[in-house]
Amino acid sequence: MSKKNQKEMSHYLRIALIILVPVAAILLFCSIFVFSIKSVTLSGVPEEGYTLVRYTDHVEETLSAKVERGNSLASSKISWKSSDPEVAEVSEDGVVTGKNPGTVVITAKAKGNPFVKAQVKVTVIQKALSMQIAFPEEIPSNEYYHLLHTGDQLSFETLPDPLNGLVENITYTSSNPEIVTVTEDGVIEAHKGGISEITVTWVGPYTEEGQEEILGDFLVNVCRSTDHDKLADHEIQWYEESCLIAHALGNAGEYTYTNTLDALEESISEGFRTLEVDLSLTSDGEVVCRHTWYSDDFDVSYDGTVPDLATFEKEKYFGKLTPLTGRKLLEVWSGHPELYFVTDVKQDENTNLYEVMEKLVALAREMGQEKLLDHLIVQLYNIPDYDKINAIYPVKHWLFTTYQLPETPGAEIEAAEYSDQMGFGAFTVPAWCMTNDYFIDLADANHLDLFVHVLDTREQVYKAANRGIYGFYTDFLNPGDPEELLQE
Image (cartoon, rainbow, N blue to C red; front, top):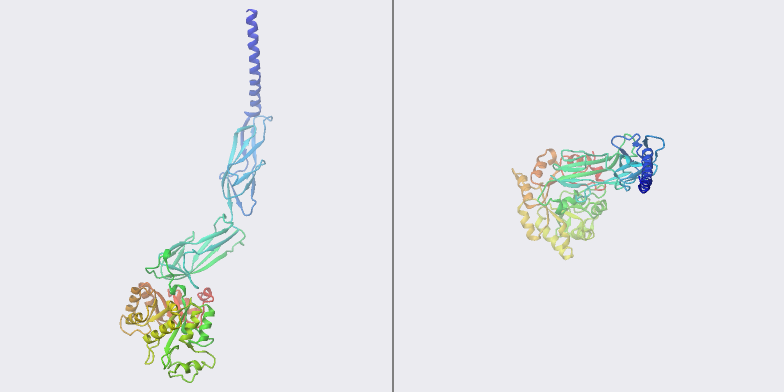
């Protein structure tokens, strides 16, 4: 080999050494420090991963990982990473902190070889610290009931605190499942007319063992379905605004049937929205509030006779109750235009329904209070009266009552069918009609909410309501505590 070739060979060997020595060094390094890292193992990790239950702002779990090495020179250090730090973040020491509900993947990588790693799924659950429940806002209600109609299906609204808290451990119970049921998810289903109480309970994180927290008791009345009963465009009817009617303007202390100013003011103060008033005519043809002239005894000089207006106004019943004229009734009503008044006219030789209506309408117009008549509910005693009264004034609200119907077969059926045909929506019968379900079934068949008169005990109302009777005339009960009233 020539010196020239030897020189070239020597040159190439030097180049090869320059290249191979570092490569060999790298390979040796990798063999010792990288390739000898075989795996990363997470200790004590459940197969399904971890679940972090968050009650407050701080919930964490410490993960432990181990690097399996081929020799002790390889690094045993771990790096940690979360797939979504907004749900759960992980520190360099493997401490996982749950921040918001959701699921993430926590990855542990060997620092000596980032291709060697282990992963665990972490689910963060936010527990509700408190819970509220709300009846659907679109459901109409009055002072007694939330009003549903047969076939309605709606859902309770749950309001956990915090708002992203888990909604769980809520129980819905209906006292009368034949009328209303509630699914475990809070879906309300109305099946047929009647009353039911829905009780909602919850077991929270701080509820004592074996106990439940009552979130709410909701009285539900399933009304009879009528043409206008579509929740989206439902206009509340007078009988839905109030299902308790003050009979003869309600009691005045211990006294009933008085129709006095005292009774009216007491009923207004108790929260009545609908009041029945008896209307009569004095001997000089003025409208006054009076049950009858002949059978009532109110300890006045004209008991058993028909007085003129001046005599009627002058004497107080029992020496203390103020009689009420039609003019004074309208005057008080004008201060409470939200009220509804149901008329009752005991017709005799001095008083008839048409003349009473003519004079009441004329009086309202004279006083500039004709608008109040939009809230007048005329009790109808027979079908022909409807056209006769409408010829006097276009009354908006009617209530057929059966107590003056002739005792002829089918009279009450004709009245109920007429009420349905005319869209009255409600029907009223005396309390003795509750001896069986005949009138309840009659009202149901004709899409009418049934009222009865007169009930004065909680027990009577409770039994009537649970048989499907909707509303009640009363002398002594009041709307102040409906939940108590409708409990046995």
